[in-house]
Image (tube, rainbow, N blue to C red; front, side, top):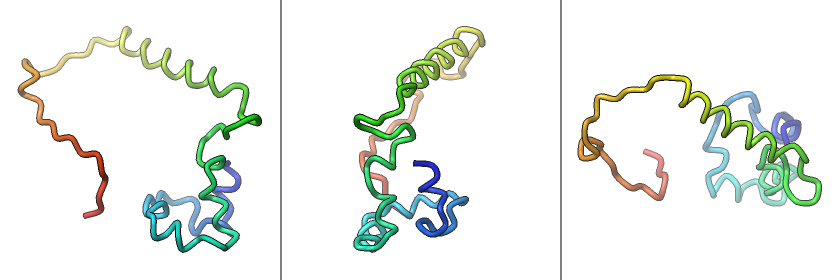
Length: 98
């Protein structure tokens, strides 16, 4: 997981946020090299996956939801939007680079 993703031998400039690393052509260029390990599905989840998944992963996910719910309850939130028609919405199911 984290240590693999921060290994400079496997990831170029691991401390930088570079979402282009996951573009299909970049992933394809890593095939057959030691760097392809970062594309394995078990390394993409923060708690791993499968039989060796972190036993605390569900607890962490539930604690996050409880914390957000408590923030919503504790804080008075207001909006200037008076109608759902005032909200601009467009459904984009594909993310494209500009």
